[in-house]
Image (cartoon, rainbow, N blue to C red):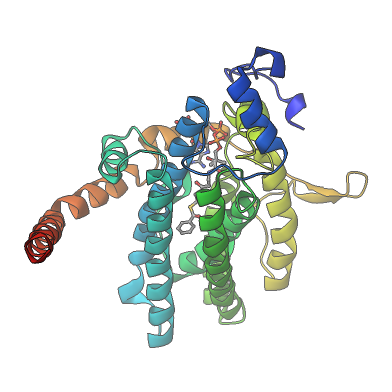
Amino acid sequence: MYAQMVDTGAKKLRSPEEMTPEERAFQARVDADIKIEPKDWMPEAYRKTLIRQISQHAHSEIVGMLPEGNWITRAPTLQRKAILMAKVQDEAGHGLYLYCAAETLGVSRDQMVADLHSGKAKYSSIFNYPTLTWADIGAIGWLVDGAAIMNQIPLCRCSFGPYSRAMIRVCKEESFHQRQGFDIMIKLCRGTPEQKAMAQDALNRWWWPSLMMFGPPDASSVHSAQSAQWKIKILSNDELRQRFIEQTVPQADFLGITMPDPDLKWNPERGHYDFGAIDWSELYEVVKGNGPCNRDRLRARVEAWENGAWVREAALAHAAKRAAAAEKAA
Ligand code: BYC
């Protein structure tokens, strides 16, 4: 599949003959499915690619807490509130595992956070859309966490040990998140006509942005070919998107709500669903910072960082005190 990609700015892959002996040995380990660990030799570009992807993934988890956190105080029942709080807390945990995995590659947490706040590092486009009704919390769990699992299951097999191991735990928790979202959708779809209309409206607004989560089409994906060679990416953006559609359409049928895509239909010859054209200009605008909530999301993160300065200072002062006491006792 990657061999069919149109080259659009992606660097040409190096053939074994063009590689240094170290690079050839590295690629042979990757090809043999031997995990690469932080202290192993790795090409500088592999290290940089992983720092880019893992830190952006971590930022997505942390920024992803904002749209849902917005509904904790307004969840309709005490039980829904407790479940949503647990889910949002899980996202913080995912961010921490991922920041730790990235730190093993030699980048500091402060640097990653600075890159997020300056706009240099990206986070998932999906979190730049507003959560307007309670049904959006259902749609996020069902669709956004569903898309995240689809993307992350193959990452459990990626070549970099710390990332692949972090993903195993993350995927287990994401599957609980997906179920809680679907459970909200079931409740709404079996409720009053107004509740069902709310669920339909949420699906209408979240469907296309969820498909964009998988990234640009393969033919326009700058990093895919190299990441596939290094087994950072096991499946391509388009392949994951298609699998997600295949999984999700029957779930919408079960709920009795309609996908907002008149061109979506089963193609018996291909054995897959065909679907309508995705408006890629929307993804590119959101990624550039022009989505409905980009500015609010970044402002919220920067404010949280500044307001938390005293906690970091206190923790550092406490650690210094303990270290001094331990030294004195020794
Ligand atoms: N949004 O060459 P491509 C979650 C960027 S959160 C923003 O295909 P790559 C959850 C891309 O970064 C889900 N940017 O890149 C949390 C690149 O720009 P840079 C987060 C996007 O990396 C809370 C450029 O476009 N999941 O699970 O090979 C609650 C070219 O793209 C997007 C991950 O991060 C996008 N949608 O493939 C609920 C998974 N798409 O870096 C859920 C790990 C593309 O050159 N990441 N870009 O400036 C990946 O699998 C890959 O990085 C991607 C992109 C598939 C996202």
